[in-house]
Structure formats: structure tokens, C-alpha cells
Image 1 (tube, rainbow, N blue to C red):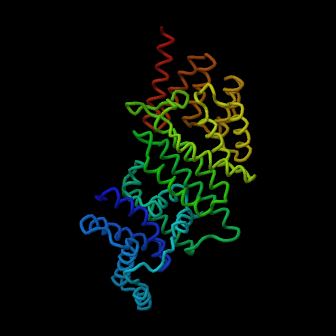
Image 2: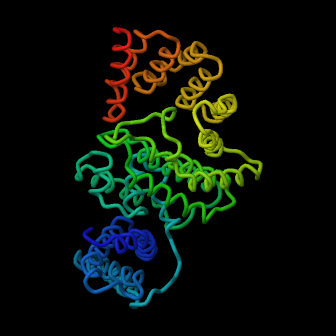
Length: 407
């Protein structure tokens, strides 16, 4: 949008609230989302010149509802739908202060959707990003992303999901889906898996914003609190993750004076409060690991035995092979590289072809003094990653070892 930063931020904040109102009234996710996008575009055209209206939310709701009404009429909907649409049109003033953002977030993360579809729909509907912005973040054509979002909306419509918060036995599953999608969005923003950029702050920032909304609505849920804490404690390090040319700087080599201490303090407060409730989940454990890293003045001060114990707990909770990979690294830091390498052997199946398995092997073989094998694994990892900064870093590590062996 060609608007000032203030107007653009306001539109992004209001978009999910307006969409929730329109979906609630018309019951059609896809058409409502299109109508809201048109209303946002109209606001982006008019507000910079004419000024933001006294009731911007009501302005957007009215504009979106009018477009829904026009759409229904233009499609020659049956008379009862035309009458219902006409009766639904609100006055200029906002009808209700109700914020449906949380309901919208749960709908976007419906279990009927794949994680990729849920991410795209969440960023579009709840996050307010345009289709072009989302496509750019994931390096796919805009038309491809538009189709993905369209299919996601159609799948929700086909599922017959009502616009409302899940209840009963469905609640826990849906909440877990929401947290998982926000976690995936954050990770893609913090360490982009594709392309030339290591960070995509529009994604990590949006994940933190939505996690904050979720936490505000569910302040006593320890896992929601743990998720937000994990994001803050991790995001605090990003200013030190790249050098002057955008090159990747690993955790052990980062200038920790560049870490955001305010974010770290906020994250520590959140995770401390969550752990005091007594019920510990996987996001809380990950947040605690992040807090231990953030608390160390330098890599030598890191409490690796405690991190190793926590990764052992996390692996028992999740059975996730990526957690097992991280546990192998922690094991190497506590008990030596040979012990870590031994733990990597069972991961050849579940992580076959993943660049991180080769990257960890390269690091541990380098620790063990086996330079030729380390070089081979650094090269293999570089060939497999789709992140250009990761690829460059791994290639440089192989070249560094090769040059050292030749001298």
C-alpha cells in the first residue's frame, strides 16, 4: 500500500477485526475476505488525502459490507439473500466494539488445512499482509500464493466451520494448531529457509504480534505464554546474527552486546511466570533453553549441562528428530564430539537429505579434529540448503578448513 507508515499500521491492525465482523454477518469467508481487501484498498487511496475518519473501524466495516451487498446483487442472488444483505448493512458508526481477531485466527488455523495453507491464510486474513507480500516472503509467484489462499478459504467453507471459538474436545487441538502455525511463521521469519535474506522481519514481527494477541486473550495458558516468551527471547538475538555484508554469524560468534536486552527481560519474565504455574509444555521448555543461551555473557559461560537435560526432556515430550539433533549438539558440548556423533546415527532415516544433519556432523567432526570428513559434510550441507546466507556460510567453513589443512 502506498500509504504512510501510521495509516498502514492502522489498516493492518483493523483488518482482522473488520473481517471477523463481515464473516460473522454473511457466513462466507472467501467473499468476506475479498470485500475487506477492497475496503482496505479504498482506505489506502482516500485516507492519506482526506484524513483518517473518526471511526476508522466503522468506516471499513461499512465499506466492506456495501461491497458484499453489491457482490450478492451483481451475482443475482436469490431475493432472500439480497434482503438479508441489505438488512445487514450497518450505519456509519461502529455497531460493536467486539474484536473477532482471535476467532479469525482460530479459523485460519483450522485442522482441515495443511500447515502451508494455514500459514498463508493466517498472514493474509489475520496478519493483513497482501498476497504479493506473502508470495514474496516464500519466493513463489503471486498467482501460486493466490491459489493456495483461495483453496484454503474454500476448504474452510466446505468444512462447514461456524464462525466462533471452538468448544469442548476441539478446543485443545485447535489451540495447538494455532500455536504451531504461529511458531512456523516466526521460524520462517527469523531464519528464512529460502532466498537471499536471512531474516524476514515482516513474518517474525507478525508472528510476535499475533502471539501477543493470543497471550492477551489467554494469559493463564502456560504454553501460550511459553510460545510468546520463546519468540521474544529468540528474536532478541537477530541484530547480531548478520555481519556488515549480510553474512550469517553463528550463535557462538555473535557480539552479545548487540542483543536486545529489553526483549530478553520481557521473555524471561514471561517464562518465569509460566513455569511457576507447575504444568510444563514444549514451548515453555524451548523458551527456557533460549533464556539460558541469552543469559550467558559469552559462549563459554553457557550452561550446557542444563541445556542438555532440557533437550532430553523436550525429546521425550515431542519425539521430534530436530530436537534430537539439537540434543546431539548439546551432548557434544558436555561429553565431547564423539558422544554427539553417536547420537546422530539414528537420525539418518528421519532427517535423510536435510542440510542441518550434515551441518551438525561437519561441526562435530571439526571439533573431533577430522578435517577431511568435516569438509565433506560442510560441502554436502551447502549443496542441500535453499537459504543463500546458510549456503555461503557453509561453503566458507569448508574453504576455511581446506586452507588450514593446506598451510
